[in-house]
Image 1 (cartoon, rainbow, N blue to C red):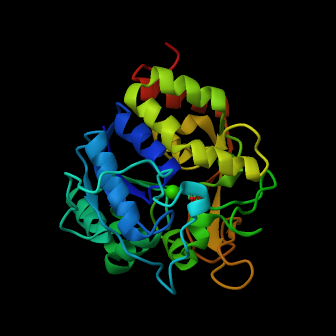
Image 2: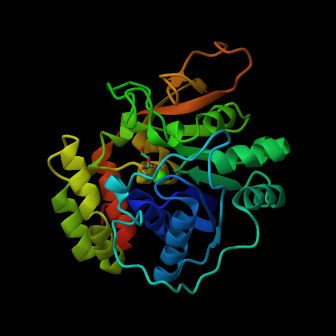
Length: 316
Ligand code: BDR
Ligand code: CA
């Protein structure tokens, strides 16, 4: 099985990605590390604990840092994910699950050192935890099996940003962390808006999921109402773009994607702060090449997502 750490800021689409990952038969979910982003760190950590309780996830939850490597955290986008970052569904004040003793980045360091070349990391929030882990323990870089990041926008299909004209939210929320992580000598795949904007769950798809995928399906329908409404305001009349689950899909089935490779850099200041650029080999000295997704077979993705949530192998 793939031994996976999920680094996340739940978040409506984070919760959808977590269920997808946790239910994939080929995955052992080792831990959930939380970050600032869709809510503040208290909020996203509480949401992770809630998801662990509600869906009986075995993985521990490890709290991450409250803000980016440099500067203050951005205000959470309540207009997208709701005030509680889970579509404003009712969440009990008392939760059974407890936060793990280690910090998020320490958990990443310890897991990788204890299981060299075994751990995959799917990172779907700001990259602060991963950057801290690599700063404190650079030795872990070659020991990480793979990292799949939801973040960035490279302009392959005209999309270069969602929070600014030139930046995607996960990268913009901590550009320095992204610049450091993408320079690490471990295999990284970047799943950006180039492919996530090609991947749309329609209202009909979500209604069907609510019928076929049991409690998880009903839960997804419930948390995503406001998320769907937000997408109407940005020109998508039906449904929403699937961001974080695309990163999980890459981990489960990379054949769904078309990729290019080259060194990736992130603009860390100025009006283009958070902009991601993938160049040719050698463009920036010895900066390692990473993989960037430029296309996705979106229909096959939607089939895979549904089949995992429903608990049946795709195509049956
Ligand atoms: C990313 O930003 C967050 O709002 C989403 O959860 C996703 O990870 C999309 O830009
Ligand atoms: Ca996210």
